[in-house]
Image (cartoon, rainbow over all chains, first blue to last red; front, top):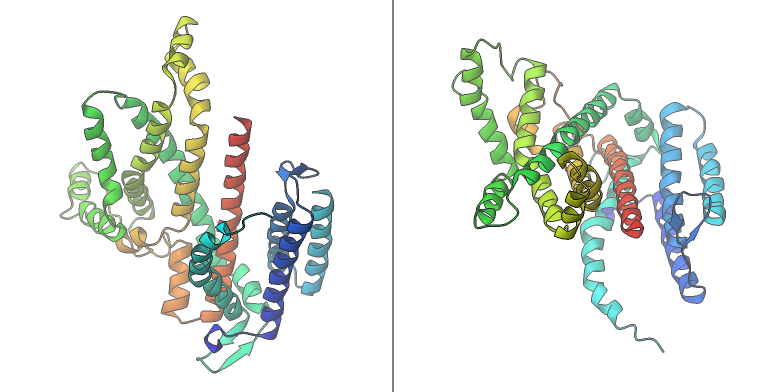
Length: 90
Length: 285
């Protein structure tokens, strides 16, 4: 695996995404999702909202890195809050 | 108990996707946070390459060129493709011939298309270039930015309008004749039939056409590389070409990886927007 040039932060990042996907799969088996309409202008399942949250988090970080010199954890906190909101009310 | 054996059928696809997409993507992300000197010498730099890449004026101008190019491609190819599809006969023996003729540009490899147009547009010996020169136009796609852009656009329109036309034709032939009869009984004009009968029925195929052309034009590399080499200057250097020059030309693997991840995010966002749009249209119908 050395050719993949792993670092601890990227390993943790991918592990977190993998864990989230496993959690979603288990949740789906235990508590199947139904498409619903919330704040987003489209009907979404739990998986849709998770995907939108990840995409939104990526673009929040991109925007922050592109326009601000501040610490990145600010973008991470905004992304977490956004993800929670999207998962709960999206 | 549910039979879950069908999941085994998905396993080969999962393995192929893992090896062809997920693992390479993870590697690129790993590279994007490091300064890579060689296989064993790497320094963790965090998100510095992303910050640097996002603020790189050359990348910003390449992105603007890319957006302009893709917008022009869509603005030209979608209406033209519909027009071609509308002009084709819907039935009869000549339909097959027309469809084969339309498909020919799609069968030509991209580098060959670039070479064809490079020769075709040469101002000294090319049929197009020399003709324009003889008509008094100061045309030279290797020296003039506007000429280079017009040649690139013409080449892409020539290469890919057929795809839109074939998709639109498939959509048009799927419209039941009863709709046309009803419209004629109501005294609808040709434009009204197109606007209120055909266009709504073409929405799904046109969305797919827009998605395919947008994605493809957004990732264009070979044709401009062969035709103009990104010039004159950087005037036709698009994102893929800039990325290749970073990764292969300068061997800046860290910044190139960060650039790749950003590029991937943009393409992913566009794909998701269009996929959502297609699904919404399908549900609406």
